[in-house]
Each structure stands twice: as structure tokens, then as C-alpha cells.
Figure 1: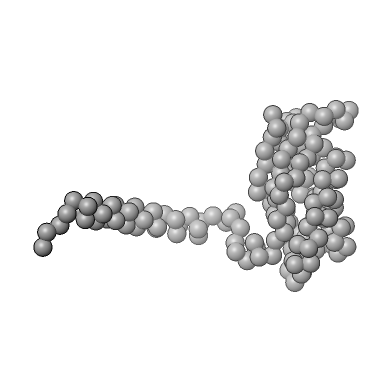
Figure 2: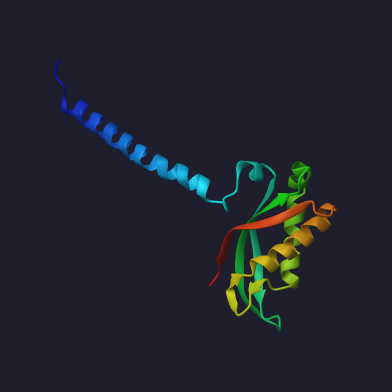
Amino acid sequence: MRISRRDLLAAASLTTAAVAVAATAPAHAQDQGAAPDETSEADIARSVELGGMVFPVFDEKRKLKNYLFISARMLAGPGKDVWKYREQQHFIRDAIVKASHKISLHAKGDFKKLDENAAAAECLKAANAVVGEKDALVTMTFTQIASRT
């Protein structure tokens, strides 16, 4: 039986790929168990994704300073119907953007950063008002925050 160069290269490539996968698999398994801030599949199933929101940033005199581009995830409370809230997602997004135009949600002293605690509180208040239920949406996680400048 004679082995060609092509067969040798294919075998070497497969061996290299298998070693690379085996070397990274234990590290990846450890990362999954060790990261408490990562969102679980169960939480994603109970969430409403809100992407493509733009928050204006303005000073105390309401002079426009910047824009923050936001994507977020809101988690429905236990026993709540997440599908009902997903159907109202466009109304929720509209209420959040309107709220962001009333209060600048930037971090104090930095027009390029979002005050995540204040923003989450205002956004949850606006979202729950839209769906008409107290504590329908209970937490908000910002998945992406970008600044214009």
C-alpha cells in the first residue's frame, strides 16, 4: 500500500485540528462554569431583546453632547408571559427611547459612557408602563454600548 503526499497532508491537517480542539475544550468547559455573569439559556428564553436604540447625551442645559448606541436584554419576571412582551417589543423600544430623550443617561462627568444603573431603572420603568404590569420586566442587561465620539 502506497500513501500519497495528499493523504499525508490530509492526515496531518486532521491530526492538528483534533489536537487544537482537544486542547481548547477543557478550557472552554471551565469558562462556562466559572462565569456567573454570562446569561444562561433559560434567561435568554425569558428575555426580550432590544437592539438598535440611540440615546442622546446632553448636558444640564440640554445641549447635545453625544449619542450612545445601545443594545440590551430585558428579563421577564418569573411566571410572566415573555411572548406577550416580545409582541410589544416595538412599543417598549419606543417608550425607552422617549425616556432617554427626557433624561440624559450618561455617566456623571463622562459624555461617552452610560450610567447603566440609572439607565436600567428608567428603561424598566418605561417598559413596565407600556406593558401595563408591575414587575413584568425585572432586569435589564446592556449587551452593547457604543459612543458616537
